[in-house]
Amino acid sequence: MKISTYFDPALRQRMNDDMNVRKLSAKTQIGYIRAINRLCEYLHHSPTTITREELRQFQLYLVNDGATGATINGIIAGLRFLYQITLDNTHVVSKLHTIPIARNLPVVLNLDEAKRFLAAAVHPKYNAAFSVAYGAGLRVSEVVSLKVSDVDSERMALRVEQGKGGRDRYAKLSPALLEHLRNWWCFANKHGQMYREGWLFPGLDPINHMSARQLSRICVETAKQAGIDKKISMHTLRHYVPFLTMSCRATISWFYWQTSKVVTT
Figure: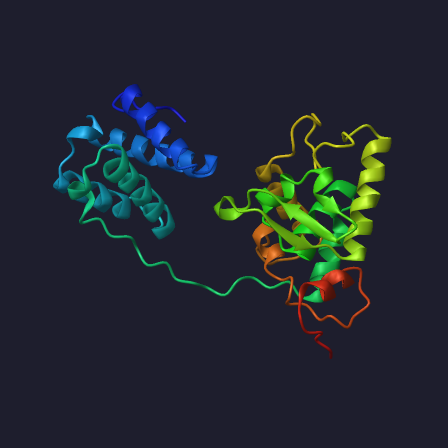
């Protein structure tokens, strides 16, 4: 991201400090900085001297430029942080309004599609990673951040550190999913792709975990290879822990762990 010359380094540092004090995630911080940077490029002057009318015109510009409601709301969140927290100027953003976002039903993978998808993920690492997202309901950022030590085979649980909202939690681990992870662990150690106490899904350099973007890209490619026409993402996978039929004997039979009731057909 190219930083605007109108985004004063001292102001940017102060805003970064305020975000760090509040322990905002790296993704949120990048989004807020990008929002202010976009404002500076529009204004062609420092954001510290902005007027309410200029801010109104900026939001109108975003709408006319074709920005989605989610994009506009993300920018507004960054603007509110800058003016309410960093600059202590609540008045200037008091008239900003977020845009209601329509809540559409998520894409559903039926059982046959799920089997085809996992079968298309031939590499043990990706098969195991997709199985974790699908079988334990983890977000893509949580999947790639798992460490070998997070797999608790005694309590049959996955420890998720610093998940959404910075909270730690446990996800249930089924015997079938544990077997997938053990197969991947054995494969990775045999081929020198993993440190024994390192990341569960390392990148090319085992010191670092694979990126969420990389896993998301491979997810889309795998769906195409499986011949699935639906728009599939990592978020699609985690939505359906309790959705599938529990009575089948498919390769994804570990789902019975994830619901309090067994659904039969």
